[in-house]
Length: 102
Image: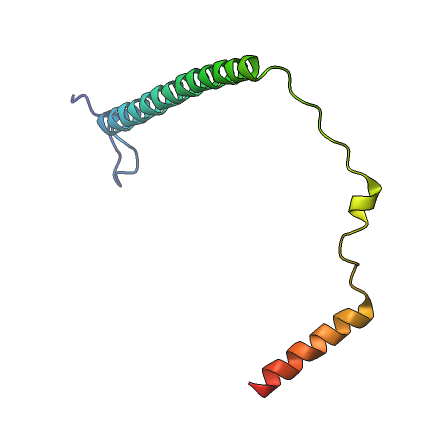
């Protein structure tokens, strides 16, 4: 008897050789994915360590960080006023007229 399983009259079942080949392909793909993930994680850890060392070095050279200045309420009152329904309607009407003229 051959090493292949009998497939029956209509050939529905996979032979072990085909199943073994599919399993080998799956294992190879998973190994590649796992290896790439490990390489990516190692690179991320290396770059993170370099970044943290650089930030610590920069902080040591610059000294303590200066506190941020507080924003006074007078500065915030200089912002543009909120659009009202009336001004929004005027702008929409102007756009319509501009489109109709073109």
